[in-house]
Amino acid sequence: MASALTRRRRTAISVAVAAALLSTGGVIGSMSIKSPAQALADSGPPKASLITAPVVERRMIKSIVFRGDFGTGRQTEITPTGAVAADGESGEGEGGGAGRLVVTKVLVNPGAKVGAARPLVEVSGRPVFALPGPLPSYRDLLPGRRGEDIAQLQDALAGLGLSRGGDPEGYFGAGTQRAVERLYRRMGYAAPVTGPRTEDAVTQARTALEEKQRQVDELVKGRTERPTPRPTADAGDARGAGGAGSAEGAEGAGSAGSAGSADTAGSAGAVDTSGSAGTSDSADTSGSSGSSGSSGSSGSSGSATSSDTADALRRARKELAAARVAYGEAVARDGVMIPMSEMVFAARLPARVTSLPLAVGDDVEGPVAVLTSGGPRLTGYLDPALKGRVTTGTRVEITSEALGTTATGTVGSVGAQVTPGDAKSRTKESGGAAGQARQDDAGTVNGGVPFLPVSVVPDKAWSEQLAGQNVMIKISSALTDGKVLAVPQAAMLTGADARTTVTVLAADGSERRVVVIAGVSADGMVQITPGGGERIAAGDRVVIGQ
Image (cartoon, rainbow, N blue to C red; front, side, top):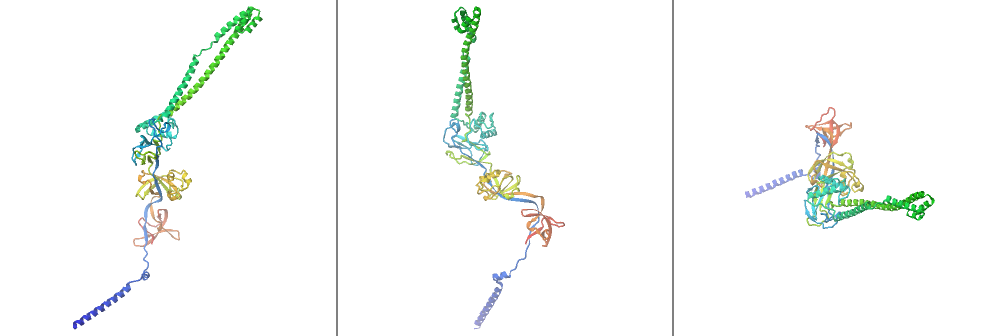
């Protein structure tokens, strides 16, 4: 009984204690838990703290940053367009003759650097190669031709140690032919020639020349072998006849005058009754008349013949001279040549082989090789508002964010303003950098924003990996000769008294105002010089905000 009562008392006490604890906990919990509104109401602003920055000692440098693109260089496509000449059996140009164009050998690999007269591929057994020159190939280079492309060929040959001999500049003569023949021999191929057509022209011109020479020789020979008239003998005969007539006239036979001049002789005999006088007059007159008649008739005929011969000879000699000129021209147009299907001019060599589209056995219906000369070229897009701030020779730093690389160089040129999409600005000559910019899609260059094209010359050759990359260009120019004290622009305060001050925070937390003189500014920093009696040094901390 007592045991049961004791248990009930203990249970009641435990319940009472538990209820007291729960009540106490509820009271405490209600005091510590707050609603968001109450918490916001009970909160206050934190104690303000100062933001500081150090005073630095540095050289003040102004930086200009803009973007630029790397071009891939100038590309030259090599596309044979006709059968290739080989020893006059086939070929382009004067030789004529069509043949299948097929790749028979590939002699280089993509990415290889090739120089002048390095065979790249063989097309139908003939080499395809490049020579240096800015003027593009546009015709076969044939003997006897003149032009700037011939002069360019001669310069390229001279660069390889092959002289044009006595040929004038820009004329494809015998000396240039010999140089071309040696060039092909170095490459291991027979030099191409103009072919049967020019050979036939030389043969025909030679035949015509020989015929004209034969005609002249015959005329000269006939002129020297023809009998020469003898006027002295004819005059003597006439005088003899006249004398006989006069003698017969003196005897009363007037018919004798017919041997010379009968009328004159008879008259003379009849008039002059003196035999001696009649004889003398008749002889002289008849003789004179006979001589004049005989020599006059013979001289007139000989003069006409001689004149005709001289005219014919003059005509023949003119024709001979023309035949000689024609023969010389025919010879000049015959011989060694360079067909456009074998050689192209590349702006710069050595160049990189960027593409070999065809394989051995492929028919040639497009480029057989693509060369890129000059390597990557950088064109920067400078804001026109900065015109005059960037000049030739200014140092440049280039950063490729995509590749994580940097490079340095100098400004090569600054062109005139280019407005993307504007045909006038695209055709305006404004320097080498603009030329590269205009090669791109005019509507997308620099996002369509007008710019000044800036070319950059590298300190070292650009990495080939930069081709096609968009990069950051940074140009820095020094504004001070040496190091100066500088603080952030936010530290500068200007009071009502127009004095400029900065607030220096001491190590113990105290603040002091220092009067300074502001100098040049760059990249968010301002040069400062302490005012009279003021003290500030590198490493001090200045307040820039709170």
